[in-house]
Length: 117
Length: 312
Image (cartoon, rainbow over all chains, first blue to last red; front, side):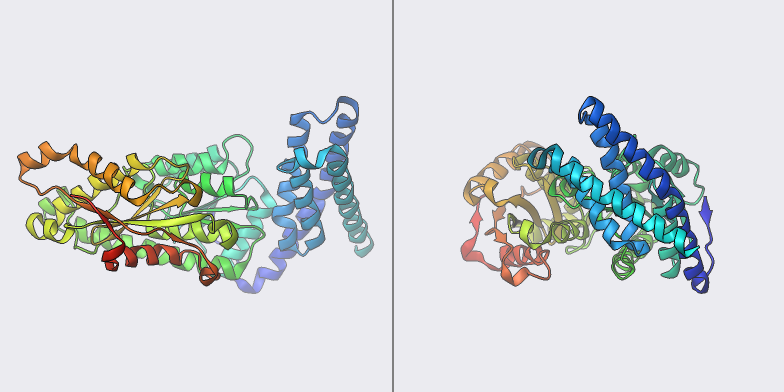
């Protein structure tokens, strides 16, 4: 789809819509990661479960800072490294702790969003 | 400039598109996967000028997509920019080896994007002008491209060949610390001017491709990145730990070139002779621009006669 976007005057409104869309999806992302963590508790950190968390953290880290959620971006990057590149060095406990911190920040943002509506 | 941006994250795509729009780039097409991108490339009636690819996507990742776009004849020279948060050396190496021109790291920084796309836009315009000059030329010109002595010469069929811009972007993407493990080494065809004057620009271009092929075959390290700097000068990058002694490399390269001896003799063409320059490594003086080692290596091999290893 080739889009001819609105001009710069509409940029702020457009960014607000993207931010809204990101937050709308964030609740689902929290539930998905929770479910993956539960599966890890049950079956251990199988590679496909680790990859599922890494993928979600990666996508969060890529976009969150640009929408003003710097802290979430930093935590998501740490999760990606925890379960991904640094997994062998850090181990399950540290990776799970980082994931918990990221989930806390996601839930804090969702609560703040609810309060602001 | 017509851009195809590929990312599986709809929020990122929307954000990125807004950023591009605010910078004046309005002809942006988006795709949510490698397959979607290839489909849109296939359907496009007006070709894309530039590609911006996420690396980590389900199914075909951005590096494989880059390789497939690069394999399309229409896009073998098209600028391809990777846009990712993967800043580790393995991903950077693999992206540039697959044909990436540049490497941007997320999150989106409009100032950085403006600077990088500005350079790419200039590149696109220069290539367009060159293409128009060739298609408006006579039949002979179209059949065999002719080059000035200092012109760039496309080396796309040579394994590891990349243009100067991509090589510079590779070093800058590594950052100074990791670039310090990398050296630039220049190779000079000592009799390049003589060959050019005797044979003309078209044959000279073919001979330089032959030399590049020999150089590519010679490089045995993990990195294989070669660029042609014009005037019979090549530059390649090597991990410092894998650097080969200059004399030994020059001897091996000459041996490979010697294999062309009979063919060149039949055609009455002088065989190229080569000199290998002193490796240039990143140091404190390259803090702001690690890519300066490329120019220093090139300048060095052209000027430092005493430091050269010559073979005939």
